[in-house]
Image (tube, rainbow, N blue to C red; front, side, top):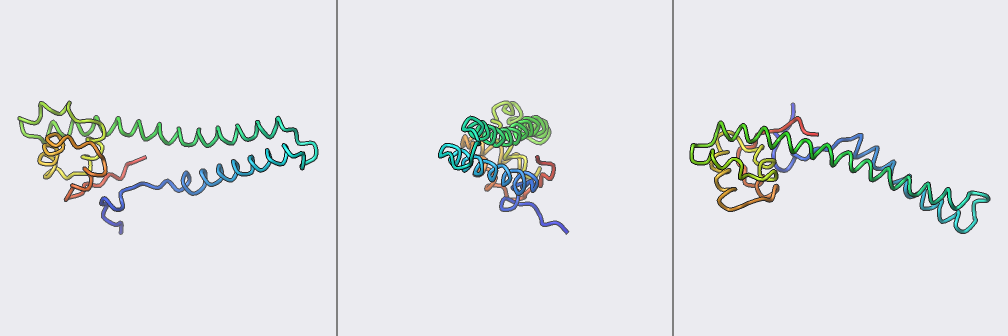
Length: 152
């Protein structure tokens, strides 16, 4: 039986990314720095300094690539959430607020996706009225959590 999703446990951990890929890339980066240091001091016979520098650049590029892949995926996810939540708001908001759906920022919509249908209109009005844009602050205001189990 799964635990009910809420603010405290809604963050997503991707084990292959967080516990395998990133640690392996960090170990590779550290070993590249050690190799560069040793090559610069001529301690490892014949390993050219050029190759050590190239190895460090490649290790750094792999870490940047891993984080960019994650950031790009999260960016696409936010765009999809923005579209879904605008459609949801059109269905659930009272007439006076429906005209303001375009005023919501991506941060606001991403946070509001966790609000239950019943509390969404009141919370949405408060977010716009108080110009709240901090995702965590908005999520903390949610009383009845609507889980999102399809996150990247």
